[in-house]
Image 1 (cartoon, helix red, strand yellow):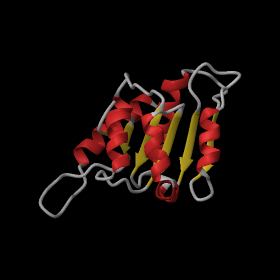
Image 2 (cartoon, helix red, strand yellow):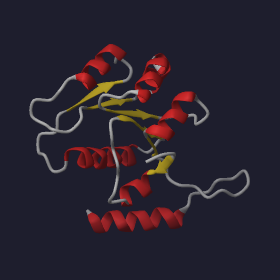
Image 3 (cartoon, helix red, strand yellow):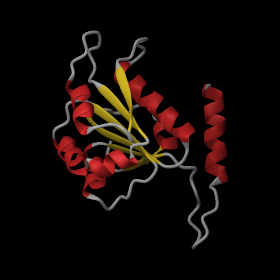
Image 4 (tube, one colour):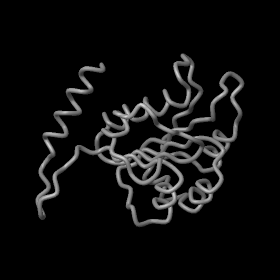
Length: 165
């Protein structure tokens, strides 16, 4: 996938291509981030019960630790290594150059869960081109300066989600 995808569109899709690289889940809706992460894990590992991935806190994570986790080969899985960094805003700020290099030659799948993701940075542009950027916010209707909720789209997704769950 390329460019930015909304969580609703990704969750409704049955054909998600998750290859080694960076996936960013950005926005303020934790529920959407959790569902998108589940979907990514399912597409990488299928129905494996014991999924080999590590979750790190962006407040404490060091790039060397994240990179080592991504480069470690799993003994029990054939898929790529998956590392999730939660609350990764500070991590992205601290290791932007390393992340830009990683997008160019990834070894596994790095999922960054951030609140903000400015689309005008080199990193965001590289992820949009070669990775997966997923907006995890309740959709809004563009009407001048006011942006009311897109209740029609929200209700449609809630009905779809309720039927599948």
